[in-house]
Length: 377
Ligand code: OSB
Ligand code: MG
Image 1: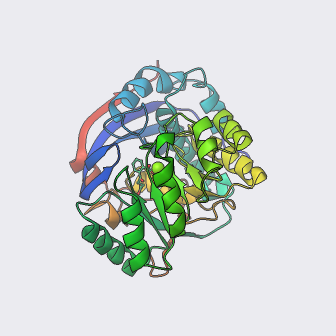
Image 2: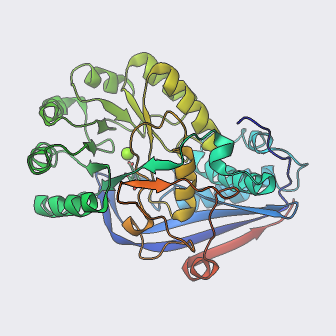
């Protein structure tokens, strides 16, 4: 953040729950999602508005947070900490809810809205505010567990034809070695990685070691969601690089992971890490440690997607992320212009002020299942 951001007020806020059906069910080792229920935070102050999306899903299967829980914490604690307070820049506003323990995704949603507001006020794009250096982002796609190997191969074929630069496959015990073998046989040179979402333990060492022969880019979060010690033990016994997701929720977690050699790569999700500004610092720390990073996703609508693209424009994001096009998730996104993948597998970083998007008001209204307004005090 080279220049300072404007000091603004938060006079009013809205919490809005939207529901968008997914184009296809998304199955991971922790469950199946058929709809994206997204909590949106809208703020207004000094005549400038901003919007943010909370990463939390419906159920607490990925992390402890849920969209309903985030709504209650934002309504009762996070937004009241900033509503009606004297003007402050985004860092100053965020420091007002620092006393709240945990609830990173709820905080990150509020911070995204304030960054959008500040960016609009300063006529600066979010990428510019965060220190982005790239105008286009290399994109991968995350494919859920499919009903069959054949269905997986067909799905991969389709996404590769669209141009995606790397394929991430969700896996789980029993749906791993054969999966990797079949996919590697059919797509010998394609960048491929697996994501286990914490489905394994060290007793599965043999299966995890068997994956070494398939030249995977990495395996994401094989072990427990809160573990760093076993990941370090595993990393010392397999060749495939471990990428951490669930296990790193803070700078302290990252420091421990680096010190313990719990992995070699980090999936950066601003929601999991408590905001975009903390994510920039975590990106910097990874750079110092020689850990490449990439931008993860939480099936966000175009609102959260815009923030992900801005974050992914930072220099350390050297690997294609889960920043996929709107059409990979939804028949119709919440934006006037959906995010589209170019045939070279890249997407443009938004350049307009703040998130740089235009929300489709009618679509927003039609997908809203809950809306409440918060005033000062
Ligand atoms: O583990 O990265 C994950 C989606 C929801 C919850 C957790 C994860 C994911 C994804 C999809 O992998 C990423 C995306 O395309 O948004
Ligand atoms: Mg993951």
